[in-house]
Amino acid sequence: MTPPRPRILLTRPEQEARRFAAGLDLPEGDIVISPLMRVRTEAAEVPQAGDLILTSANALPAAGELAGRGVWCVGQRLAKVVAEAGGVVRGSAPDAAALVAKLRAVAPEGRLVWLRGADVVRDIAAELKGAGIDTVSVTVYRAEPAPLTAEARDLLAGSAPVVWPLFSPRSAKLAGKAADGARAPLHLIALSAEVDAAWEGPAPVSRHIAPSPDGAAMARALRAVLCDLSP
Image 1: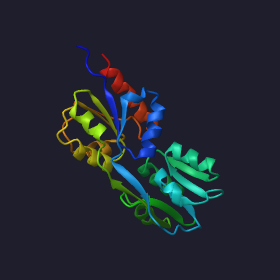
Image 2: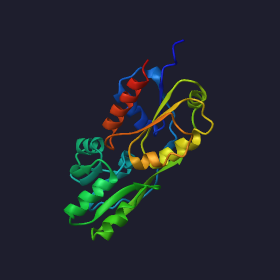
Image 3: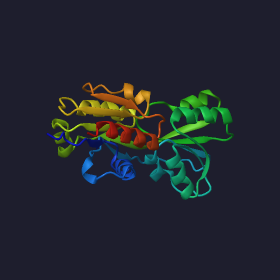
Image 4: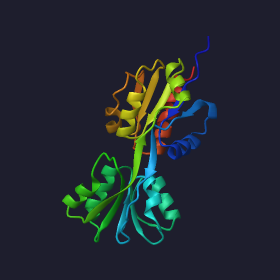
């Protein structure tokens, strides 16, 4: 009897999940999208002076006019979006820790404005201020938990292997709770060791960590897992 084809479960916010799925170039039926978080923009007054720090594309709607404004970014894709909008990319790094290290090394003059979500893994503003770099943070969006779709619940209750990319510690925690009672064989791919450590769900059949904390590396790791699962 032919074993069931592995399926990919994407639980990122809708826009990011669909963008990642499009880059995989896999049959649409192999991918189930069920966001575990819905992003809601918060009303906030963003200072118009000073370079911006953007650690997530979710902050872009609140950033306003970027033309000519200096921006420090997490991720090459976000840096590309900023540049296409006319922003001046001062620098980018693959993750928040690397960006903090770069900013501490450069020690830019003037105030930095970090546009952040309500829930963050690390307080970048506090770290930079501790290094003597004038930084303010403004909460401009909130990611609220959302339940799995019926299709995702059926997937976890089935027998097909489920390949589950996890992109943040918070999403890994939410995913672990959502997977409670799952019968499907789970194969986890975490963006980093920190994300992997946040998983508190049922024991997976396999768990993997992307070689670098970016979407391209996650996609490569995912394809490698799919290759291993192919009959």
